[in-house]
Image (cartoon, rainbow, N blue to C red):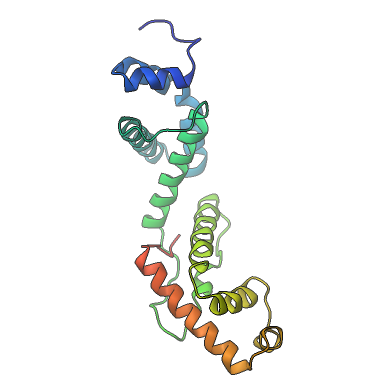
Length: 195
């Protein structure tokens, strides 16, 4: 292999896309230690870290071949983000969080509480919260308002009713429909409330 130490990541990517497979090999070797260390720091299991590392580069190769890479000059942070998402997916599938079946009697937000302080749990819970927050924005305005007041501002239903100038029963009804609709959105978007 030619000496490519002075070649930028972006140029190596361009060479790989043009058909030079050694360019990708050099790119992997250049970032292997940092990326593997990052994965290992989180998963704390060598075999799992090797699997995630491999899956990360499979995803990178597929993205590059599809022409979907646009993180100019930021290859390593992009690769770490891919690894991070794969780790979250792994822990979501392998570790179950206490979860109650969908019903009107349970509060969806109860499933989002952190029960352990592991790095993996914090990552997954953070991602779940981010996913749910995005979905909340799709709710009708009145439902979204009540849900945010109740769960993010920790207001009582009496305070919500006063603030929105409706009866307590109306505020409760809006909350009920907000949770029903949010559950539907979660199911439709295949968000897994597990860690």
